Picture 1 (tube, rainbow, N blue to C red):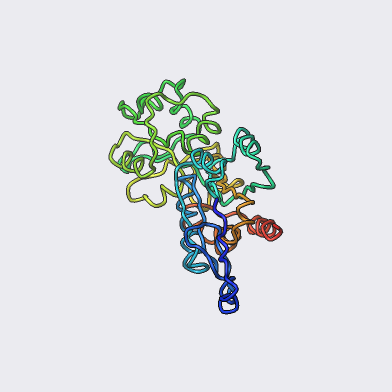
Picture 2: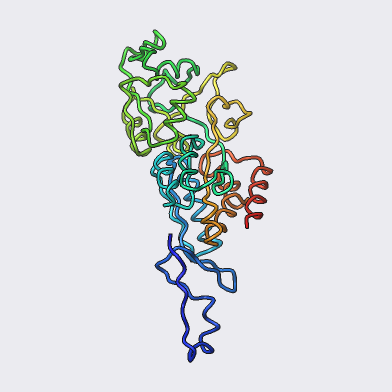
Length: 326
């Protein structure tokens, strides 16, 4: 982390340049500054979840366009786990995640002198629906039960062909795809959906979600899982499986995704984590954090990026939490 460079005035020039001293700032550092008209400068560094990336990138664009044009908000998409590996040693200001931070990661933070809940704050941004996608020309697996989906992705399920799921389906080999271990979506699927049981050995796990979209769109026997947002922006290439959780098939949509809604069985919260020390040291980081949880931020932009927004009172609580930081 960089420190502010203080412009040292000589006695002779002191009176002449005094008015400008409060505005001096070296563009090479990242601490930021505030001018008399509340304009901010500096950088905000974010990395983490590829699932959360479209939403956070959209929030960053809106912030730089409408709020602080001299602040550079840089959003990466290395994956939830990879993002935490940067966040824990202090390389980033925020860490986006499509799964909750793990106890082991909290222990690493605290080993670095960062107390979770004080020096690091957790914010739920929105709700995402884990979406099972198939090829547009697949006209048999358009509806499946949750149990069928889980069983086909399990190594112990002994499913290699569509006919292994239902006898009337094609006797064709299934091509399994999903995000790799860098992504919180993989961890959510493995831990929460598969209950930490081994995934089918033939599954091809990818780093880039765009690669998964291409693989499924080009193979009628392909199936994959990822966040709803990536499906919603590729409905011309993919179709979503309607999932029967026990009360009939449910299509993932912004009206069904939610912890208490019909698609609750595959709904999950998505997160961002804030380094509070950096927020207090760098005014642009705290200002951006407030924007993220404002009604102009995640609340307004969640739906545009394939996420269901939280109840307004949750965003309001986050706003009060940030306003109280000192």
